[in-house]
Image (cartoon, rainbow, N blue to C red):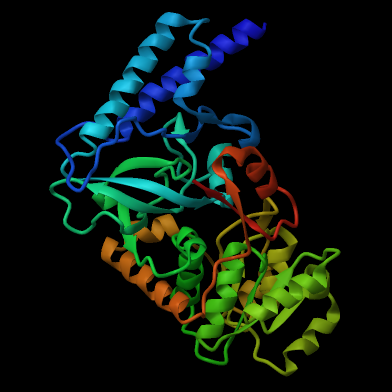
Length: 401
C-alpha cells in the first residue's frame, strides 16, 4: 500500500512538474539584464492537483521530490529530472522570451478566494494542476528584449487572478503584471491587488456618497473590511462596523477604531430593538457591504435608508441572502453584487492601473495600511493554510519567499 501510494504521488508530481515548468516561460530568445549563475535556481511552488481541503491537496513541489523517489520509478523520474534540469538550465542561459518578465516572488497572502479556488468553489478555476495564490508582490529579475514598461528591480503585482503567486520565482508575460512603487511597505504591496481594490470600488460605484454619509458593513475585521474602514475615513465617510462576538471583542474594537472605524458593534447588538435609537445621532446608511449572507445580511438591510443599496461580495456563512418583501417594496432597497475579476473584465487595464496608483497614494499618505498580518516562510505553508481557515482569525497569513 505504501509503495502504491508513493508511486501515485511520484507520477502525479512528475506530471505536475512537466506541465508547470513550460508554463514558466523557459523558452525563447535570451533576456536582457540577466546574469547567469553557475547553479540553476531552486524554484519552489505550492501546487494542487485536485480540488479539496487546502491543507491536504496543496503540495510543495521541488526537484528534490523526484530525486528522493528515483529508485522506485527510475525511468519516469529520470525523464522528469532530465526535462526539469534542462528547463532550469535554459532558464539560466535564456531566461525569458521577448515579451516575458522573470520575477522573484517576495510575498504572497492567503486570501479567502485562494481557499475557495483550491476547494473548487470559486467563479474562476485554473486548469489543474495549478500553482496556488492570486495575489502578491514580486521583484523583476530580467526582462525580454520587447519589454518596455518594466526593468530589473521594479516591483510588480498580478494584473488578474489565477497567476499562481505561491512560488519562489516565475516567468510571466509583461501584460500579466502591473508595476507598483517600491517605496510602499512590502505587506501593503503584497495585499494591494484584491482587498483594497474591492473596498474602493464598492465605496465609489454604487451610491453617490458625500462626506458625512454613513456606511454599514459586516465582516469588518476582514481584509476588505479593514480597507473599507480606512478608505471611508479618508473620504470623510462614517462607518458602522459589524463583527462576530468573541472573547477579545474589546481588543478587536479598539484596533478597528484605531484604523478609523466610528462604531464597532456585534451581530447580536445589531439585532436588538435598541438599534432604532442608534441613528438619532448619525444618518442611516445608504450603502451596506455584505460578506456574510444569512441573518447577518438581513440585519444590514433593515438598517439601510430608503433607496439604499446592499452590495454582496462574499458569503462566509454559506447561507443565502434573504430580503424582506416589505423592505424591497416600501423602502425600495437595491441588492447588488461585486466581483473584482468581473470589474477588471469590464474596464481597461489602464483603469485598473489608475485604481492601483490611487490606493498607493493613500498608502503613502498613511491613510491605508496593510491588514494585520503574520509572515510565514513558504516551507511552513501547511500551518499558514490551517491558520487561514480558523474562525476568528484576524491576522492574514502572508507567505514569504
